[in-house]
Length: 177
Ligand SMILES: [Zn+2]
Image (cartoon, rainbow, N blue to C red):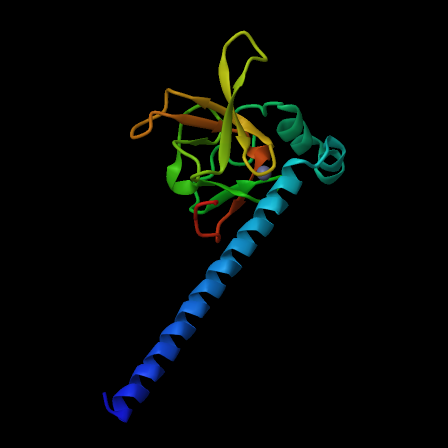
């Protein structure tokens, strides 16, 4: 191996090692950001009821924190047909996409599916009929209920209170972590 070949090899090794270091640093940075987001989310879900009571207007508080149901056909979004994204009215998490909204005839905003990983489902035994409650995964807000009489392809109907949502016409839909 002549001197020129050795010099090229050294240059190559140096640049590869620099690239590896950069990749390592960026992976490290991503882990750091993800941990920060996790702890921020943990802080949101642990906020006491008094926090939400002081932050939310009485109607939104009743629906999202006391599981009240809005009257059908008399709420903000049941008849909203614009393209956009629906976010949680309590914490701003992206919950539903207008592409998944359909006219269920019930008078409440209805969706065939939520954004991936954005909601949690838990049994609701508050009345005689067994229902599944839909809550915001990030902040625990009551959103509505999940029924299995929805259209294809999911067969599911997420029946959601408008007070749990804010509509954002400009926000592109994307998955919540
Ligand atoms: Zn939320």
